[in-house]
Length: 398
Image 1 (cartoon, rainbow, N blue to C red):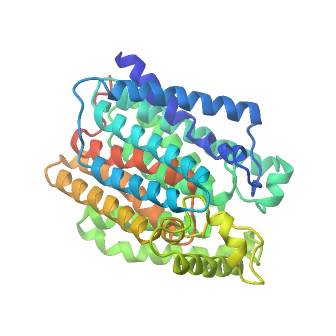
Image 2 (image 1 turned 180 degrees about the horizontal axis):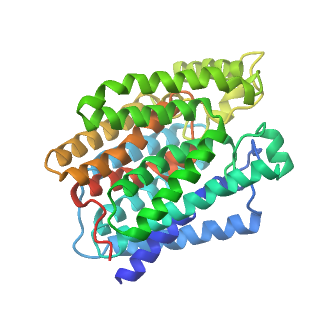
């Protein structure tokens, strides 16, 4: 049974870089290029469904537990259900509910089974291995300028198996701090070597994304870790943020369509207008694209899938109730993590802080972008990972 659970975790983490292909199953025009054929995408969906069903069965085994994060997550889910029921497209709301429930299941599985021998090793080996492959693939695609359409849409920026450069950057904001923590603290020579390889490949791919929001997000993640680690190095945190801002100002426009500097302004204004008209429960999860053409400015983009800001998207789609539930869930996570860090061993605390730094970085990126693969695919599992590493470190590796 332990081996079976380890395989479930390994399979789930290994396919995360392929999650962006799921957008091809939605009735929308893909904003980039999906490298996964439709049949493979359907197969991937079937695999994740099978993993989810097995996970639910495992969670129903005695003893059933009620972790402290479950209540806030259920409130967040209930806010989504309410917004979906009162929104413009309950069908889209059902899709949100399904995805969010899967995230909760993954979160609970990590909290319950992380300490089982072999599970933590399966998680980190699979996560670091697939992330390294995804980063290398993105680098090679840019060098070879293939696929040509992806190379053109991305303006020679790294994208890889993702749809847009910002998605790859968001994934790496979580990935790189985790790889750093494992490389710093693992006593397993093979796992430590894999973590170093992940850092090298991931850093190169991240730089090649030339993502403005991504660069600021990673700078914030590094600054967060340096500041929370304490000591004399804490004074360098503001300098790290300034360095990230400087890099964005000096390099960003060279690798972007200049029109991108203005399109988000009109989308933000449309998002504010939607939130103003539907303040309590919003227009419904995933319904921003449906309402956007009705409120967009005359010079705005014809389509927009979200508000290019996580909290503004939450306000527009789930209203004040949804926004408050999101903030409460994250406040509860921060409070639980702080409590665990106070009694944690120094090496465990460093690993948990590294993972939490990645989460903080995605919030900074989320101020001006919305990365679905991070929000729906990695946030809840990574929250659980941060909490478990605070008490158990790298876990029972054998």
